[in-house]
Image 1 (cartoon, each protein chain N blue to C red):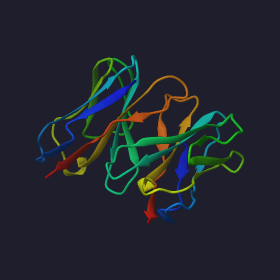
Image 2 (cartoon, helix red, strand yellow):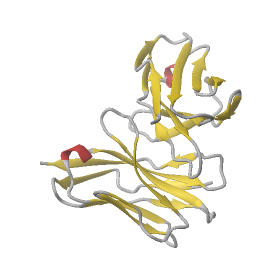
Image 3 (tube, each protein chain N blue to C red):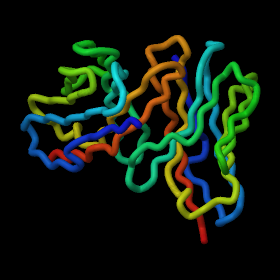
Image 4 (cartoon, chains in turn cyan, green):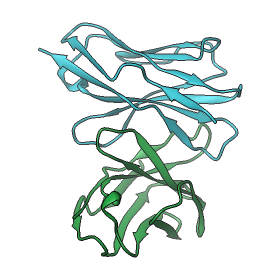
Length: 115
Length: 112
């Protein structure tokens, strides 16, 4: 079974600075997808970014980018120019390419943004 | 565009009472549908998923059940709630490949 590990229960960053959230996963599959979701205080899960394992290029979405290291099974999220609205719980998630689309989540990292 | 609705937003129920949470999706057809539970301070646990009407897969044996009476409607039920059923319940949908899941606003359930 696949597992997703987020080793940082909490992180903090100063407004306008850059922060990196870590995620590692364990799988024997070659076809899979990785995601970062954000859960603000409203608790709705919001998709931040998605990475296909077959793509070597790291995904980017505006201020959010990932560092995908397939051999190391690492998938970190970098938030540039942090804003107060980035404060949230961030979850890393794995989806098998051959599955019926089930997501395996990490336990999350709580990000605080200091003004 | 697609939207997903959940209701109620908040629910307080006594132990032993029944439960019905509803999730509907608009703007797409034949979606995969999912129910998750999030206990306080924890990650998400997949409870049920459905790839079509009447097709339900259970991930965790427990006090809950799910049904999909219509293509874009997913219902989470219980005949008798337990204290341990308290939590935040999220519905999600996906379609295509990769099957990115999009979540609803959630229901906060407190069982007293």
